[in-house]
Length: 352
Ligand SMILES: Cc1ncc(COP(=O)(O)O)c(C=O)c1O
Image (tube, rainbow, N blue to C red):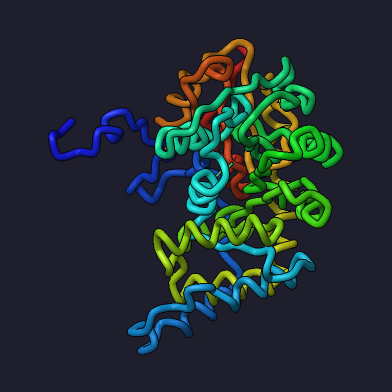
């Protein structure tokens, strides 16, 4: 606390990101990064952008990337918004849509940034409990609200909500903006972008940090009705006109163009996920059904914090949340087959 701070800063509870260790030898299965590198075409495009032109500001509208995204999803570019990671897109969306008299709704177990933005923007919220199987129940969101947000697949559970249930949520709250945060959708879900034509209250957000392996570049996007996009552009242009730099614009556009690389790396992650689930179930773990590049698992006989500490001693990091309902779970990012094996070896014999 300081006399120089704006008063509301005293009450801010910031997001705590997963550890980014300086030791490179660690097997990092804690922040849902992609174990395979970005498309080589994206790397080439970024290398070419490292030039004398860096003295010039980038295109404030990132039109090259907007059009690449629009082409990829078969939507008009007026439906696309871009930001410095989907975290920034979400922050602008809170500012643009959720500062309402009624509370924002999101699942009790969900992306831990959601309540943080509420603190930043003074948004009231109600956490809606997942059911006993850790699933979102669409009917629980049919109540007065000033907006709804949930990840699909959910994080940190990895569980997918079917598109007809997403539609039910949209239909039940036609006067609120509903954000479907699809950070992990490419690992096993169908995007709700197919619904944006029919639901003017739907905003779908995505990121290039996971399935396109560009977490270090910071690029996120939203697709929705042009009225929603206009609100986001107003907020963005009142904050930072140039959220995407020259490398990010060309690198992200090239990543969207390289479908073959994208599809093959997603398939490799999905195949490794299925293999790891089988190995962990063989060790007695209960694993929630995952459509993401991570799994959420608990062992009925072993304490989750203890297991996280045990594998950490052997150079493998996974994520553990000290939070009600999920304190006995570990969130494990899917690595390469070798990284996954390192985790299985570090867990050792759990039969006693
Ligand atoms: C559910 C969810 N949404 C959004 C993000 C933010 O991703 P980024 O800011 O890297 O685009 C994450 C990152 O882990 C996430 O888990």
